[in-house]
Length: 186
Image 1 (cartoon, rainbow, N blue to C red):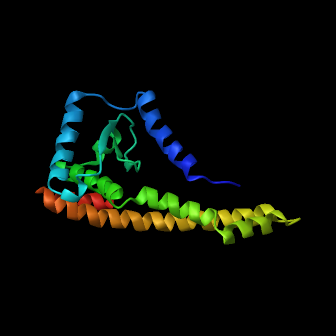
Image 2: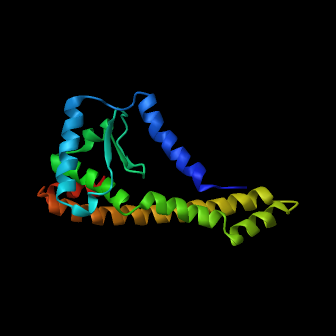
Image 3: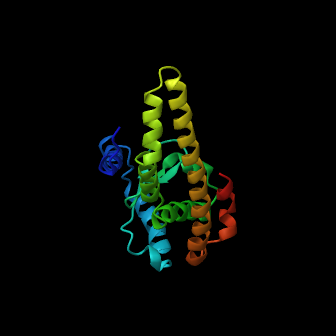
């Protein structure tokens, strides 16, 4: 079993490429200009974001989500607007996704997962399981579940860290932080 970081990064590029090829990006000049104006305010008031090479795109996808792809692209789904009560919440969501970029969560998670999967202990456990005559499937399932649960715990920690950083970014913007508090419960 060979895991290469190159493959993971190529998958990420493919995901961004598909957004455009599948015509899922909203190209409305007004919507784009609005999001870019908010992004500009956030970046101009948080100097540490200036060198991130950020691309904020508005997706036609109707499920409520925004996400950072990890190489500078942030996607904001149209379906999330239904749940936002005010502009401050929108700014908070953008700040949250910028925080993932700033804190390099995607790249750190990729590295951590590759390091774990390619570790001597993990590989030895796979070899041990593969040599079992009976119950190998159940043992492999148990190993993969422990890996998945560890990743989820790490993901929750990243979300909390991104929320804290987003509040710091937002404080600098001049938008009402209290108007965005409900975002922490979305």
